[in-house]
Length: 100
Image (cartoon, rainbow, N blue to C red; front, side, top):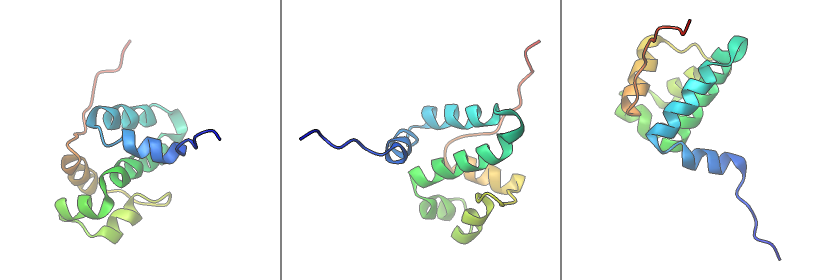
């Protein structure tokens, strides 16, 4: 009998435990044009889930429910919350010059 394969989500969350993978994943979500905001929120939620949302929220001195709400499809992620989450995840927000 063939071995069962892991689901995509399980494999994704495992990969997102690596900071380089997480950064590339988040940057790719930001490059998706008009859907970038929703995709970025979902991507950030996946990264947070990979590291444990409860753990990340506590380390960022944020309420767990507030983090879930901010990262939901209808979330209203504030820059201060984004900064705290990224800092706790070992990531940072940057602005780069657009290629000509």
